[in-house]
Image (cartoon, rainbow, N blue to C red; front, side, top):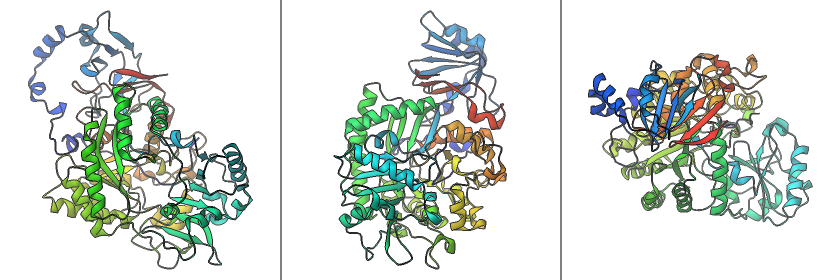
Amino acid sequence: MKKKHVLRLLAAAVTMGMLAGTASCGNANQKTAQENPLAEEADSAQTEQEHESAEEVDMVFRGGTVITMLSEDDTDNTAVAVKDGEIVYVGDEEGIETYISDATEVIELDGQTLMPGFIDGHIHEPGNMMTEKKELILPEGQADLDVYKKELQSFIDANPDLPIYKASGMDLQAFPDNIADNEWMDELDTDKPVVIADVSSHGNLANKIALEMAGVTKESTPPDGGKIFFDEEGELTGYLSDAVSLLSTLPIIEYTEEDFSSAMKEFQELANSYGLTAIDSGGTIYETEDPNQYEVLSNMHSAGDLTLRINTTSWAGQPLEGKESDRLIKLLDDSQKYTSDFLQICQVKFSLDGVPEGATSALLEPYTKEAGQEEGYAGTQKATEEDLTAFVTAMNAAGYSVETHAMGDASVQRSMNAFEAASEANGGTPDGVINKIAHVNLLTTEDMTRMADEGVIAAMQPLWFYYDPFFSAQEESNLGKERFEQEYHIRDMIDEGIIITGSNDYPVTADFAPLHAIEAGATQQSPYEGEDDDPAYIRNPEQSATVYEMLQMYTVNAAYGAHMDDIVGTVEEGKKADFVILGDNPLTCDVKAISDITVEYTISDGRIVYQK
């Protein structure tokens, strides 16, 4: 079952020619395997001779279809050989024979499909695997205050020693007119603060005890980009959108490095079962300092426990002034000792605006009156253009990439202004720097062109593309029908030349199975049983991507965005053996059957990390 969507977007793809440059961290310039001149000069006779004297290998996959993702027409290969975690042969049945010995593990594909392992382009690891141990996750699909009260009281009774009760997954549909208030929380039997995050994680509902402890009053000023909600009498409702910093003095839930390591192992198991072999982090759900995060992940890799390659992300906080770039540059510089083939440490993220359903996305034109805001309200942003530009300029100059969270067209515009100005100030975008905008669901035609020209990646979420009547209705009401229909113009973005990566923004969207998102992006409708043939779930069908473009978003594009395209993202000799083996071929099966394809094996660095 799908979790209600709160943010939304997808990721698309461009031709391999646009991704030819290696996306290594910092200023390193390396050649990809595709650019090896020796490989290009080798003629068929040399290749045959090499195969005759080929070394025996660790693993062989044969008898299937190999989707290399080098081009849409590269479909003639049926076998792959792996030695020491790297691909040493891609070809046919005859050629693979010379690689097999008694010690070789031979996997018969029996017509199944082998392709590069999937890469999620924006995910908050380890997500609920961390928080579910000490925080309540409200039941999915039950937007009912009576259910919420019962679940919360049970959690409170079962955890008497917690200093604060936190929950997540609150659906605004549980409230009249989708406007959250805390009156019902007075019925909870507790004298401790209670804070509930909505599905988007951008909005929080605090009980009266929490507001009093944090000193939040009617006179409180929200942070830039945030909003405090009041009822018709001008009293606090307890709902804060992108203003959780007002509650920063409340007790926190402590998590240890052991908690993080355990949660990461659990998260990896689920990710591997979906065919994922790498992720581009949108920022961890982790309340300990970043250096500990990096050390834990590095230790997991040293112990052989890391089965996902990770492009990590460090959060940039408010206010976004010079001292924040100084802090992050030092943090990332000091953490380079943890880098490896499995761990990239070269990216920071700043949330520039909020979400349209919470009326905190920054828009170029005001929200509708149905959004319940003052006349002319268009949202606010969390940093001035000057501060954002200075921050991006400093981070890029130090060799580090910047990702902004920007859902409204005004925040996308400000992001692009900053990226362009930084490039000009630095004499061009430094080698190894890949800037991104996460979500980018609404943008102008001009900014589409600028994103393509500047090479700024759109990190998008395909399961937000179609019309979800439980959530899309609120967004349509806040934006108005015409502007609502301008969101997620994926076809236009691809045609303009924007590099899009695919993700589901877990745990904002609970389902992060790539095959579900790939189907959704190719159909622009729900991939779920009972919804996939219902016209009520279709949105902008003319904006569909092709299946191959969707596969690119989760392989070559995501590898590039994660600074890993020199080692993964395609199936070719010299790259790491990160594969997913599927029970059917997504390029040839019915597009509405893609979400039903089974993951048979997931291979990470030449290791079987999942088997159906």
